[in-house]
View 1 (cartoon, rainbow, N blue to C red):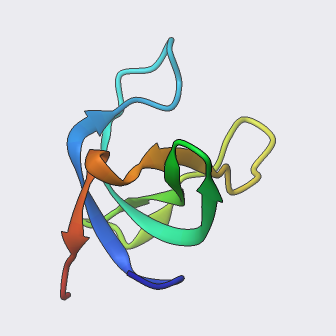
View 2 (cartoon, one colour; view 1 turned 180 degrees about the vertical axis):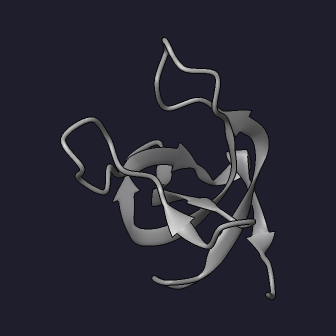
Length: 76
């Protein structure tokens, strides 16, 4: 997996606790090595509209996932 790859999340992720929208995909923004294992930094991605999730401030929010929470890269 490399920065820019699209990955599928093993579980749908809801970035806004008050919202109903969930995301199944993300774009890798980076990889951080931690003592407990690698963390994958992801920008949530809507595969149907080819758009990146933006938060209430219109910033492309980045979320951290463990390696075992994502599937391998997908091809589009």
